[in-house]
Length: 324
Length: 188
Image 1 (cartoon, rainbow over the protein chains, first blue to last red):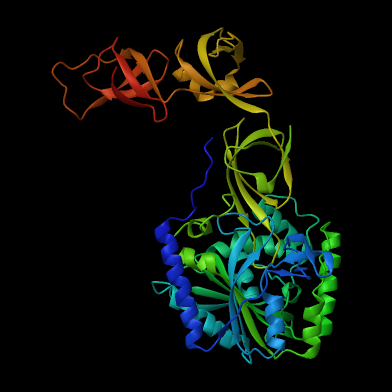
Image 2 (cartoon, chains in turn orange, cyan):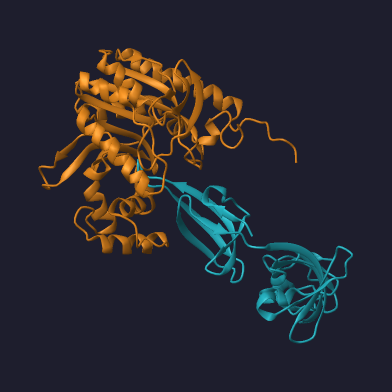
């Protein structure tokens, strides 16, 4: 068999990609958001139970030690916020082990930006403006979709109150797999992926808000006035069934952050996954204090894929897995 | 056989599912926001021919299936079984039952070469070549001078298949037929 050395994107696409990246930089320059570069390696990794971090052994002034490849540039950027950077953005290489498919690549480019003083609503608006700035054609109106409302409309069930046994039954029926030992979030994730996501972002941009508090990750939790349940202050933006961006009203409480990291590692252990070193410098930065505000991570490869009308992220990356 | 994890799934991989050998057609990695990852997989059950859509938790694995596609020449039928012979010079023969022959029964022609799918060395499916040349054994008499397009009539071929042919075709003629669509292509 000949060795497959050719790029997965054609050269014309790479020219277009470069042009779109410069559009993104121009967008932030016009809004006085500072471009930063932070290391892709860190002493702490992402503890998120559903992200698999890669790590390596490095020789440093501390001797031989384990360093983690970032799953997003979040931790380092928050340390800059704590140091008084003001609004910042970064186009950052990020790594998530095992994630390869039509819409995933193990190594990919994340556009992440932070807006001290911004409420979630203001960041949603800015995120929408960026997406419109990059896409060549109008994607249609922006529509707000509540997580709970989506499940009610599409599946006729309530993600907060439907008994676990019923959730498992629906997940088994729709996915065709055994879900008898799945937890609530496992069932909701499956139903979201298979039944709801494909219909999102058709004929417009859909912003999903008010996620269950158990899916808060690094977002604040708040009591929802309308429903009286605790929800996560985060949003996701979808276009053509593709999740483009994931934004948080950022958690700034160091103690709660520390607890969530520890809780994540307990969940990882229960799932039989290796523990991940906690980023103590991030906790220290939060203790010193970071300004309240919102931040968002956007999958640039996916946005470029949609802007150029391609079928997969591999077609807009020079050497996508497994051709690297 | 080896086990294959969801991240090794790709088109053409043969795996065991619910006791049947299956051919993976498509594998899509899906992951909502920050949630759990799944693989949405399309597989063809090689016994029934049906296409299944199944979801797996990422990292799950399936046992590989010992499935091979081999070229074999059709020899004869004894009424119960159909007999094929490998074309690799080994003269090794395989008997195929009615279930495995399936729809291919009406496309059998001695000495033609078929693709026989073996699972654990048993034949589970037979597919005909895309084009076959077969003799017309029965059809209404040809209409003299009618070589124009338009009309058609049924014709029974030597293998048993019935195809629509132009009106000018006569009994005893040999035709080229597309076995995938069951359509007449031309006179051979």
